[in-house]
Image (cartoon, rainbow, N blue to C red; front, top):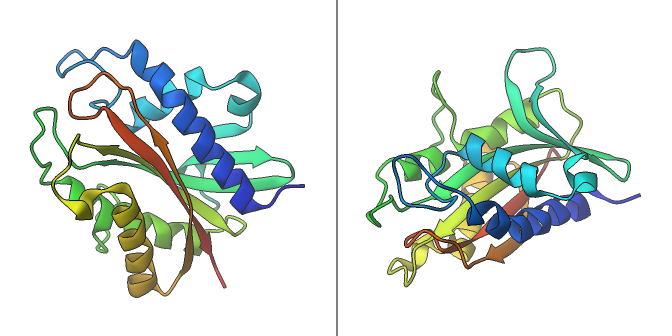
Length: 202
């Protein structure tokens, strides 16, 4: 029987290994070719379509939260572990390479909104849900070539997010994986990482 950390690390590694395959045939009707410009839901679907069948079969999508109509992006059931995971896109650059002014809020805002949630508020939602604990978060991170802002690199984002979750919600959180990928088509989304965090309720 595996533990939640191992399961989450394996998901990160499998996603990172699969993203270049999903990217190879990704053509967007509006933006440049590659998986990077697609929205989170589409990227998750494309990645799951390319995963080996035995790994894809471990992952359920859009699973209802206990007692309400909200839905959790992923629930991984493997090796005796059931692990709910919320996923978010961590893409701080637009199709033209400019900074996306909305992405920072989508990741780091601590203030809940009726129409959407940030990755930060997802952490609180998971810990306060009726799901068995622990739970997880997964970020699909894209980095511009020669990114000039060190604060926007994968390790810095992982560290800041962990620190913010602890600060705002007093939740125990661990960064469990930063799994890199590269060789993608898009000129500004050519490489990145799958980042995962484990949330503990004690």
